[in-house]
Image (tube, rainbow, N blue to C red; front, side, top):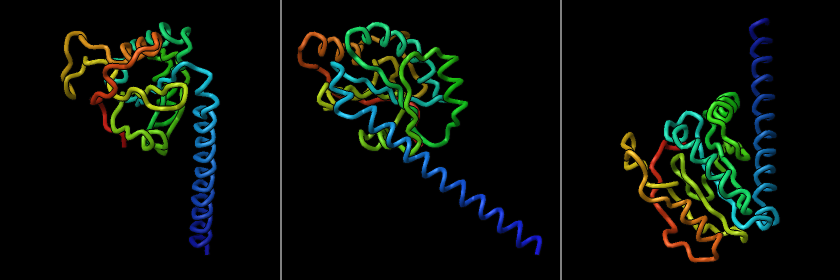
Amino acid sequence: MIKTFKLFLYSLTLAFFYSCQGIVEKQKQADIDSLLSLKEIQKNQSTVLFFLSPTCPLCIQYSKTISDLRNNFSKKNFKMIGVFTGKYHTESEKIIFIRSEKINIEILSDSINILANKYNITVTPEVIVLNSNGKVVYQGSIDNWSMALGRKKPAPSKFYLIDALKAIEKGENILVKNTKAIGCLIE
């Protein structure tokens, strides 16, 4: 009798947990939808989405670059948003990453990979640049610093994201619209 009651309570707890999780995921979907609505995107010249993972070494190494990009371009009507993808990172890992790496951009949590799936993002860090109509105008690496997983140049020689943002700022065509991002696989 006691074992049956404990099993019942355990089942009830699991059912409650998973039903709450669905509510949280629906709320996250609502947050994503409102933040990336066409109305919100049109407020900016462009929106840059940085797909990140708090445990990816490359994301950690690019954190200063991301903050510098925000400092250099946010005043020019470019919105910068960090997107934590995947369900295997806790909120505390994300908060520690943001604080320790001094990431000073708006952050979204995409634990069910809504945006990663929508834009076919497979690794972190990877960036998407959306124009004011919500169209992807650049997707890929921030620069060419990383040549392969675990192999980096001493310094980048091509700055894909900066070049794309400068072209948008000047009203010019983006010359390189897509590059292959190298990084940690999204799970």
